[in-house]
Each structure stands twice: as C-alpha cells, then as structure tokens.
Image 1 (cartoon, one colour):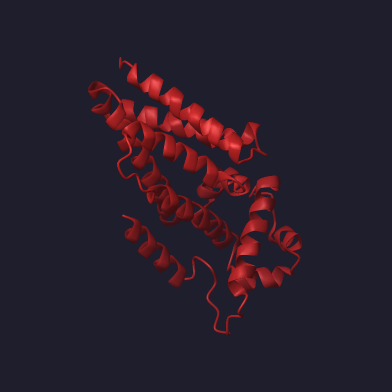
Image 2 (tube, rainbow, N blue to C red):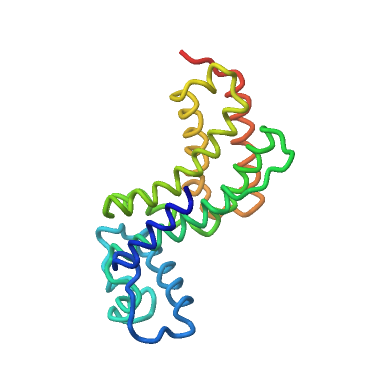
Length: 222
C-alpha cells in the first residue's frame, strides 16, 4: 500500500501538481530552503487560517520574495499538499515502521501511543492545518494524504483487535469506534498542552493506553 501512495504522489509531481519542476540547475541548498518554506508556511497557515493567508504573507514569514516562493512551489495548493504530504508520510513511516518484536499486544499499544505523541512534538502547525488543508486539495491528492492516515489507523485497529473481547474485535463498527477514540485522545493533546516536553508526552501516552486497555477489555457492544 505504501508503494502505491508513493507512486501516485510521483505522478502528481511529474504532472506539475506538486512542487514546481525547474529547468534551471538546482542549487545545493535547494532542499534546505524548500523545507524552511514548508515550515514557515505551516506557521502562517496555522496562525491565519489557510483561506485567509496569502502567498505574500508566507514569503514575508520566510524572509524571501513572493517570486522566490514560486521558484519552489507552483501554487498555494502545491505548497499545502507538500506540507501535509511531508508531515503525514514521515509520521506514517515512523509509526507503521515500529518494531514490535516479542511485545505483548498491550505493550504494543503503549509503544504506539508513546511514539505518536513524540512524533507530534514540534509539528503543531502541520497537525493543526490538516482538516482545512485537506478539504482545499483535489480529490486525488486528498486520497494520497488520507492513505497515510489510514495506514496508521489500520495498525492501531489491528493491535486493539488483539486486545478486545471477541465480540468487539469481530464487530467492524465497534472496533473502529474504539480505534478512533484513541486517536481522538492523542490528536487534541497539543491544544491544551502545546509546550509539552518529552516527559509530559510519554506520561499522557501512558494515560491514553491505560484508559484504553481498561475500557476496551470491559467494553460491551449494544
């Protein structure tokens, strides 16, 4: 599934819907400058809202000219897509690439919740603009980004299905509800604790995992 997402993203880039392709020679620091623009643009979009924020404001935040922005990105949509694609693909690779070894299903959940919250550190802007940004993009790009999220949801769902009573694990609706409840607890942490350090993130991840384990093992479907 991952390779399919990467292939589809490559098609978009080749067709000019992603970062703008340039005939000129790419400078040695092109990649570094591009990542700087992505980070600064995410800050502007999170602060002002994507719809209200202009490319001129993004350029000012980056300390470069508006024309220079278009040297790296063909449009505002291309910039939004690359912000979210860079963030979500890296997050998906990190979480879905975790090595569980001989861990119990309970310890797998503790590991996943911890690594998700640690991966979120420093990425509040990117995390905040997902909902608005996704809705503004073409359907094909939305599907690529949703695919990254879906991979992580499926991983957590599989682990929870190992933990839950059989009647819950076999009920697609119920196990999906439990899975999305876990993400709900994790995804809004940044709102009430935006400056959380590693210790706070690990502590809260353990709270989420513990609540989930106690709840799901005693949960009864209607």
